[in-house]
Length: 198
Image (cartoon, rainbow, N blue to C red; front, side, top):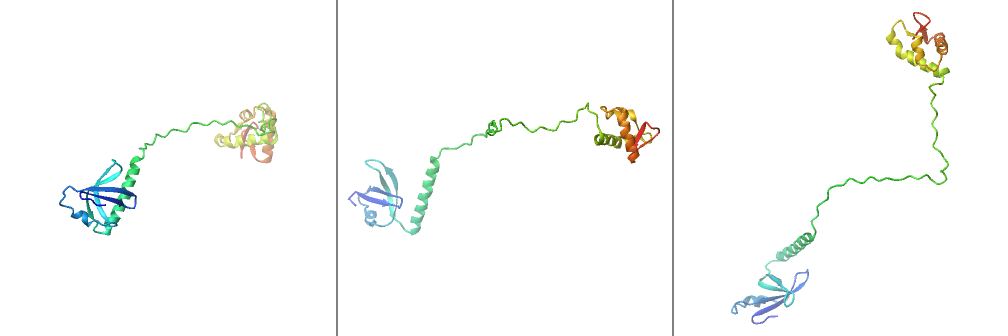
């Protein structure tokens, strides 16, 4: 609506409607008001007022010259909205990483397994038990293989060999050595008390 010194408009830029008021500062210059027609696009500038109600106080205006101005305004509105939205977000500073606390868990046995005991490992051969058969043979051949090379033609004395089988008597060790000699795996060297691996 137009009055001698004022003009009231209802502005709508597709984001919402707001009333606008334009006050004529020079009573002789009313031509710009005469150029404004209902439904036309105008470019206005001014400030928002809250009294007596929310409205836009127009400082100046002009008819829109090109459709590009409408598109530009729409983009500018969206950009301003996003800036305001981002500005409202509280600044976030990531806190330093904390090492995860150690979690201790208690494992409970399934029902019905209270009386079960863990599987028993086979008991190792006692140091005091005498080696027999293949066990004694393996110990002797392993030791002779390892030590024979560094002893040359002399070989290993029976006393040193017996130390490897402390739980056995010399007679038991000698008996096994003689069976190895007969089998061709071991031979006597300088006498019957020195042995070497082939």
